[in-house]
Length: 322
Image (cartoon, rainbow, N blue to C red; front, side, top):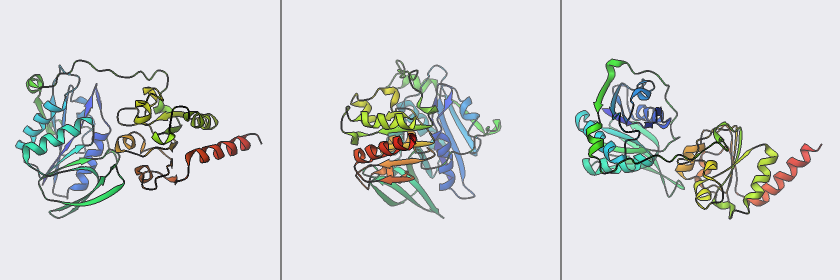
């Protein structure tokens, strides 16, 4: 069987989730299967320099576009699928992938399973474990092939970065399809991280919707000061205006890997887990024992976060004064 693993990158960089897609493809395959990486972007060099663990690379590039929108990406992928005739296509759960996977499923008529955390292959039978209700339930699904799976970021380890042999790269000119696309890139608005770079922080205290309101963040900020940590927030906190965009962790914020990540009132939606699931030590506090954050936490507590923060702050201050 041939497996096509979609990858993403822009502005001269390959997204780390692209390497996870190759690992997921290997998990879905057997010894005789072929893994073909698919990349569409302005410059194929980052993909060529990283995706050598795949058996081949299809690199569709459009030098005049910094980003290839989901519409032309889906068309380019559909052309590759028609040519390769794979038994399985893996698409990352991302802003781009959400549109691409549905588009490809509509074009092919193949079944699509989203939020996939695990793939189990037994001969010609494929079983996947996928998240339901924001990760509160894990569903085991038997999937007929050919099929499309949308893989959760962080569910699989990153494959080793390795150059792709030139003989195994198939270049495609995407300029015409990008030009015909219904969505056109006007500009890219990237938030400034000059004030804080969470990617370099060794300790982070992150607050979620469970913090209640903007004023309540002060108690978490006090704990962060004692720990020598940066304060951060999930998307709902930032969207509410309680913290600036530069302090957002997740898919549309910063991706972090601190030594300590203390999550207070964070439910753990897939978009948030993508940005922090590889932290060295994750401690989660949430009153909901089924919150998805506990799926990645090393330690967890289901008590009231305000009681825990107040007591922990008091003990840490007492210890530091000895």
